[in-house]
Structures are given as C-alpha cells and as structure tokens.
Image (tube, rainbow, N blue to C red):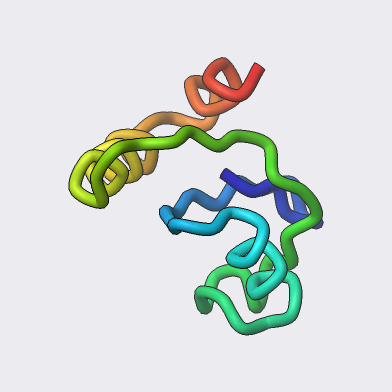
Length: 73
C-alpha cells in the first residue's frame, strides 16, 4: 500500500514491490498514481500465490480508511 502526496492510500499487488513503486513514482503505474503521486510504501505483505495476493488486495480495497490505517500501524 502506498501513501500519496495528497494523503490518500493506494493498494495493488506485484511480484517486485520496489520496482513497482518506482514505476508509480515515474508515472508508469496505475492511472490513479499518475494523478495522486506516491511518496512512500506504508504496507506490504508477501504471499505464496498471485491468487492469494489478489484476494488480499480486494479485501483491503473494501476497507474503510480508518481500518486501512489500523492495518499499516
């Protein structure tokens, strides 16, 4: 999960966190992060399969902001 310059949170999955973060910073990531510039990685978790990672991404995206902040603290 990324924190953006305008204090929003972006959630996604990847097999290389640093590479994907740099892509987002360079405007090569998702449409959301082209507008909401990421400043740092605030949460990451490793999974054994892509399916597990996608399920967790979906679960996190449904959370309210307060619950996301609890998750990263």
